[in-house]
Image (tube, rainbow, N blue to C red; front, side, top):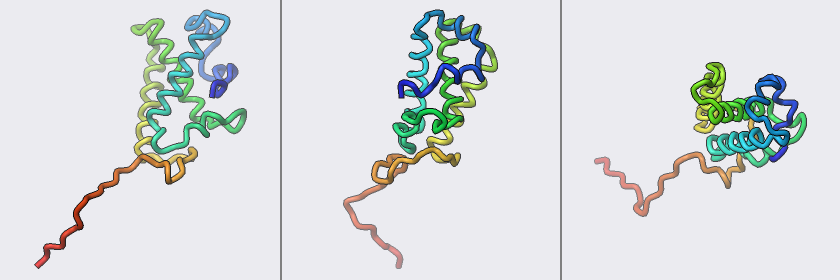
Length: 140
């Protein structure tokens, strides 16, 4: 999970000078922390329905491209929110909102996806109603 996002994944979504502006350390500590927050946020939204351990332990080309994209969107938004909350670019806000909307709909089961599902014995996404009393049939 620690290496789910590669440094080269950012090239598609952000210029290197923007990333240096957001995190000017050589170790990329702020970026790594923002990635950790983003992955945690994704787990909270879809973890009750999908196997996040399998999803985030994938490496190389086996990683889901859309999850990579929204993880980077969330991470960059968190970096902007810390650095300059009033100067966050509008397209970053839109991408963040889109990512959260998608995660919400996927997590609730409204939007189908090809993410790895939890085994049915571990599934916690639906409501089960139990009662001590047997159902009555009161039709006359």
